[in-house]
Each structure stands twice: as structure tokens, then as C-alpha cells.
Length: 272
Image (cartoon, rainbow, N blue to C red):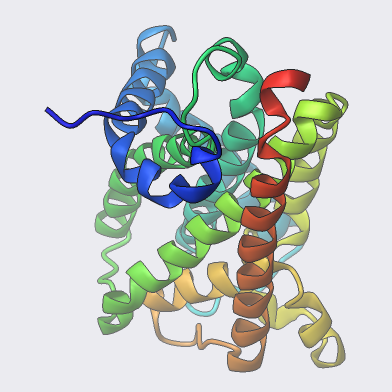
């Protein structure tokens, strides 16, 4: 049986190895969060379908019926739901990971382990919601008799980008929330606002050409466009320059998030 020796300065010298050493704790946190999310709700797993379904209906009405936005030749509900899936994963992972340290304060204040495990497990839990919601996307495609494009082989790339964006911003929020609890009020508003300015309920091609590059500073713009391109294909071509800019933003956010989290991590147990 492998033994873990606690020594002075270990957190700095063996941090990344300890991430692997504490893999069982990581798995436990993921499993615990999944059980809590689905066992202590009235509708259980169905909530992972009801929430995006209701949002899809609202956005379809607002942008499709009232706003009369173009759909690129596909049913508008399908267009919206293909944007909802990556956004829901991103927003849920961001919110859950942002609150994860405060929610696990009793654990953090008692024992040593790499704190990076906590927000990471929250994002993985949100990925379970994504998998469940994907079943409804399949049902929608069958209903509208729409076959996925050959570009679907690139879907994992955009899922990785969505994970990185959610995890990177989540690290910033989690670290800041330990010291500034007001962030718990700001994040829900920011997520809701982001839903309407991101290309979830509409195609990003409706943004005037002179503003497309600036719009792509939204890290999820390129991810959502890429997700749609992977599944729907056809007229939903990727704005390559915008995708590269979004990817660069995600990379910067992830690297800086890890750096800031590691810098402040040593104070979590004292402040929380």
C-alpha cells in the first residue's frame, strides 16, 4: 500500500504528483456531487433535460419568432439546442466550480490535499449533465429527421475548449470567492447575461462584420460556433479568425486561472 509522507514544503515540491495520489478523493468528490444533485431533487435526472428544454423554448420564441433571426436552413429549436448544450456545460461548470471551495470549507480547513481537485471535480459533475442533455439533442434530430454532419469527429475538440473555459474562469472565481463572498451574487447575473450575448439563441454571423473580431473576445463564441459546425455542418461554417481568438482567450484564462489559484491556495484554509 502506497504511503503519503507529510513533510515541510511538500505542497510546493510534490503538488502535481499529489494530484495523482489523491485521485480517489477526486473520484469520491465527483460521485458525491452527482448523488447530491440527483438524489435530493424532486425530478432527479429529468431536471438536466427540463432546464435546457425550457430555455430552448424561450430563446426560440424570442430570437426565432419575435426577432425573426435566420436559422441557416435548420429548424430553429435544433439550432438553439446545439448552442444550449455547450453553454449549459460551461455555465454549470463555472457556477459549480466557483462555489466549490466555499461549499467544501470543512474539508479544506482540516486536511491537506491539492485544492485544485475540488473545482475540477465540480466541472466533471457538470459534464454528466451535458451527457444527459445530449440524449434530448439526439431525440430532436430524430424528430426533425436531421442527420449530423461528418464534422462531428471534431466535436471533442470543442468540448475540450468548453471544459477549459469553464475550468479556467471557475478557478478565478473559486479563489476570489474565498476572500470576497460577494461573488456568489455576481456570478448568476453574469451567467444569465452571458446567455443572451453569446450566440446561443442566434447565429454569430448576424453580428456585423466589423464587430465580429471584437465579439470573438467572448471565449464561448468560437466554442458554440464550432459545436454547431460539428453537428449541423452546412451553412454553419466556422469563422476561423474568431475561433483562433476565442481559443487564445481560453488558453490565457486557463493558464492565468491555474497560476492565480496556486498563488492563493496556501491561504484558503486560513481565510475560509
